[in-house]
Image 1 (cartoon, rainbow, N blue to C red):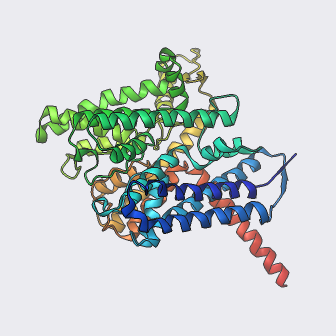
Image 2: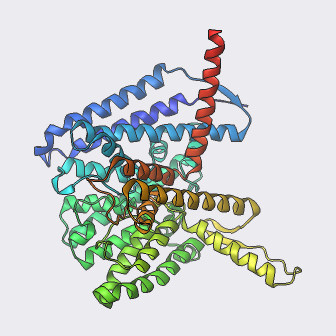
Image 3: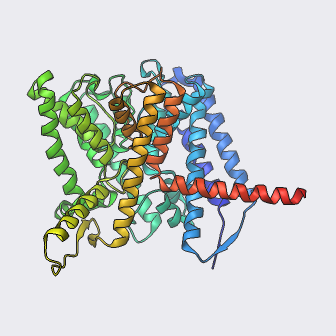
Length: 492
């Protein structure tokens, strides 16, 4: 039996979140006109650091004993859930205290930032450099995850449980801390290369850094009102597509590529499925758009926006309000599918959709082929060939079913809160739940609070992969009831 304590990990994560909120102050020497906003970042960050320090030093450490792996995982889930909600609350404060946004809008911007969604309630044409950087920096850090960043600096006995609970399925190196550091090093290398590539294409340094951070984290916040379409540059679009595809690729596959193991990476089922989807969807979307903008322009917009939707980044080159319904439907499907598992992307994830299609194929084979034919299905991960067993099938079907039910419920709610058509609601909620960030016009500075709340719920559920939130809420309610019963008994 192992003795477990939550408070120290929660305290460390609270301190780290405080440091992340203070970080944007570093750009003030380059933009001294924004120095008046420094107090809001410093005050918020220092309060989070102080609260985290108090939790580490003086907080009551509730010790419990468990030989049950499920119980240990439940407490890890609760720690991760607490950390993300703390990060969202703290992250919203600079927006709110400075008067940039209303309270609900501030929470929305924070949720969208940390979850790497990219839907925004801000008017970027009136936003100062420090807040533009802050939004991009939130997405860059949110792509890695709070636990990943903590493990990179300090790891404990329960780090692996927390690491898995936050949605990181692969351990790339024998040591967990080395895994986090390896991923961070790859992230930094790609950031430097991406920023440089943008600058070579003619984008200013500040915009290059912000867009590179958001492309790699599949975030989608932009410093421009019309996103990447503002530049109308083919070279910038190509750089963005490459960075988005890097961001949506499993970290384990990226490590294979950096080590020169191209053939092994090309055999990974998820990678092949990614390019197969693009080869299928891009021509269909281009043909649909060709009637209104010509085949050449249609192909260009189809390639960029399909890559943006599938990678769940959320950058755009055009408005979708005039797109035909067929093209909108294709975009919704791509946003639902999402990017690579174990990457910064959201959505159902490529591996799960691939497995569902394999299961459908296997079911058809059983009906068509003699019962004596024995077929053991497998798929290829970065670590090698893996059997598609009953447990994997059950987990995949359960997650996909729950995800689609939430998608339908959220879309219907949006039709009520925003008064829009079902098509627009499905597009917008697929974007929120998949942490994509593309908008068909429903989300912006004028969006009402009810719509923002529905989208926030979708973003949180999508980033934390649904079950962490649901189990955390269930056990939190159970513990609250238990505490209430104890208080009632004590009064009697």
